[in-house]
Image (cartoon, one colour):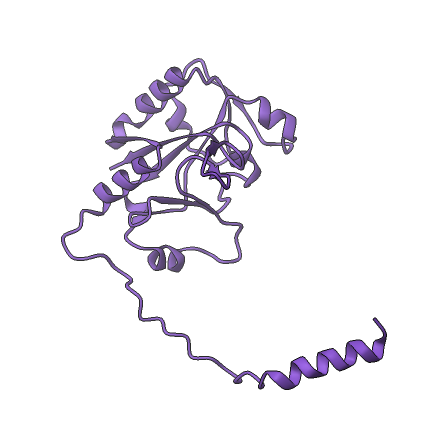
Length: 208
């Protein structure tokens, strides 16, 4: 195509569409909270379980034991552990072999690990979604996408009602990973395949 022909085509496209307005008023009157009386923690646990994730609801004092039992059932010993993860979370996992991401682990190292354990930035009751923002207790995004097993600790005070509430808490300049259950996708025939772009198994410990 010659430059003259290309120019003529683009000119006709421009002539066919009027100039857009300088600004567009985007309505933002969507719901920012759930109906009164909704049990937010109960709803979050229910929605996470709907995604085929395993959910444990525990008191703070039972967290180390619950984590240790979950890892033992999984047979997970060699776990990637972010540098800022509270040490007491893993205190009862006496046979754990923590793998530090310093220097940064390469793909083969992450793939060979039994899993990863992290905290989270915020969790959303309405959608059953967990959001990571690469804070010290979560580590960089790659360590939660490659291992086949992810155990995530969520505190009750991190659970919000809706997506708008979550967005208001998050820093848009940080790398955000939104997790709604184990990794899963479907082909054109709706055959479900798990583990394509993240862990096949998600286990959530919800601490009240």
